Image 1 (cartoon, one colour):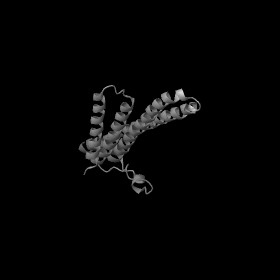
Image 2 (cartoon, helix red, strand yellow; image 1 turned 180 degrees about the vertical axis):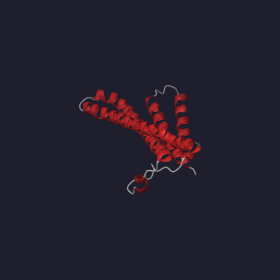
Image 3 (cartoon, helix red, strand yellow; image 1 turned 30 degrees about the vertical axis):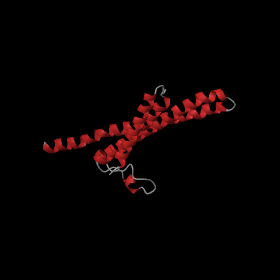
Image 4 (cartoon, helix red, strand yellow; image 1 turned 45 degrees about the vertical axis):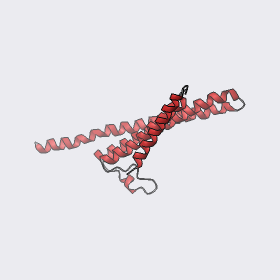
Length: 166
């Protein structure tokens, strides 16, 4: 009876496969959304020829769409790293990732601390891009608004410094 219970408990780790598949599908959806944002910018850029009034509005919208695309791609990266990391930690090692010589080993994860570290770095980048997106679209009316912006930039620089400091 004990062996059967232990086998069931051990095999229960395979339910994580649903999280792996969901993470990878979510990453694919976000990549498609980011690609669509870039497609919108490319499509709208054809209207620029000969229309100066359109340029100012296009410039603001294009920056918003491109930053949104970067945000989508970074979140997709988090989900991909998360999915692959869960697979390697709970289900099975990915032999192809270990043997790959053409690409970096960013997706090779051997323990939970490596997974947390890699996800944390990408999440930090997502937060930086999100801050940038809001900073670009914010209307700076008072000098205090610029002070808040500079404090935000300082805190981002500080977080990057502490992230890279060993």
